[in-house]
Image (cartoon, rainbow, N blue to C red; front, side, top):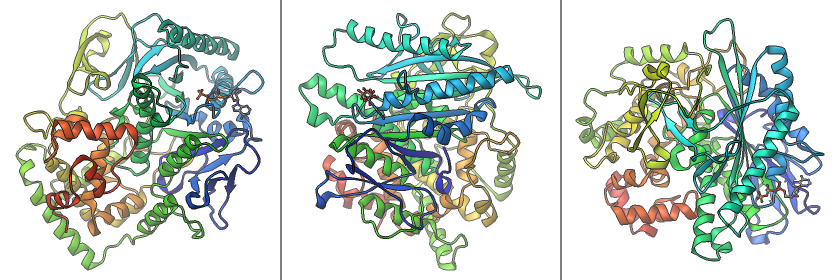
Length: 605
Ligand SMILES: Nc1ncnc2c1ncn2[C@@H]1O[C@H](COP(=O)(O)OP(=O)(O)OP(=O)(O)O)[C@@H](O)[C@H]1O
């Protein structure tokens, strides 16, 4: 994961499977020092010819070992320091995802290469290594190293740590032992497919977690680092491939993980306040590894001209085009125009002119007014009252380190009953009792102060449990207020770390929702700052509103004015067919809402 531009957290690369010559062309814009490339597909008709930008592209002659040494190896040391490194491959069916992650006997994949290197280093450091292998099929997680068991549950404790209940973790002492386990896991996919009598080829997501536990002299608890590899099911257009209701529904549910990942990466790269991890099981279970200063690499696998492959390139390009600067002006794809627009915004000066400050001030006044109704619901939760409080939080957030020491896989048979939510499966309100080690009871006991998810979703709610739009406005208002009071030095000095893990680099603790939230409000990169300036000039609320509509749960949608049960269901149905069906207010007419009504509601002229 070489360099990521402009503080984007997730690096997005493409890998081309052997394709006929010139069917996919890769161009490196002259003068663009970022290393990004543009991809175009020869089969596209000239009127639809587009080019798609990604951070880097590996061509067919560059095998997995090249990708590994450039993109993953530099970050392995972080895993021994308690960090996570996650590699996710997606693409059309047969585009080489499994070949990239798992590889073949002759060409080991990224996971096997990583394991080889981890085993070498663990011998030197005395770290212990274990693996978990799982499959996500239709939102059910199956433990492939112990397939007879109940599906794995994704749980969240009171501190916001994700636990995978029922997923086994098997110790590994050599690469050959690992390869046997990995092969066993894959055989178990085939068995479970035949068990359900599925005649169609099974489409599921296959995941591997390599756990590395290292003890250090300085910290009492051992450091738990992780390497995640996820081979997402091949994308296929549900409408085109549809051959019956069941197949259509299955295809859409399977594609949902790709859409959800797309939204999560866009939100992470855009430093958004709200990241829709809950939208699919895979993003939910990887939530902790995707956040903060952990490293994430998305590999878009591409094969020769096919509509699905082009769509995957488009998706990759969109996630890559958030907050980036492009110098070349010769290419005119839609995504490129979007990127350029962003780059212009990103160059807004840090110091605000008097008129901008006045507009900002007026806007804040409006926002505070709009959200006054929510203030009663926020009793006792007033954020960032004065400068001294802000300064105190900034100081706190800068002194925290980011080492993970959490054991996140829950053994099945333990003692005390602790209430933990399984939100992905049952929705945010459902709970289930599960057995858990008594020693962890204190950590897991629900505490309203610690549970920022509760703060995000429960504190400012209507009687039916859904959040108010005015609360969303309150968040935006707080964000703007903070920006207004922050000194330029704060805005300029905090860059998201781009390079390899440095043990002594002071970093913000992003392992808890609370710090994540404080960071987003308080310590912003220059790009986020300018991005936050942008809404003051135009349509910020519209963009926030659309982002919310594109990612909120049904209950959250129903909390908005004008959206009831039917309309919320319609919105969710449209989101099944596209990752972001509402790009502009006019798109809301597909669910019977007029742009005029929404503008009026948001007081946008
Ligand atoms: N770079 C490559 N070079 C040579 N052969 C490749 C390459 N990538 C993939 N293949 C071959 O193409 C076939 C399909 O690849 P693979 O199974 O990895 O695709 P996939 O995207 O995982 O498919 P699915 O969507 O069905 O999961 C396999 O036979 C694989 O060996």
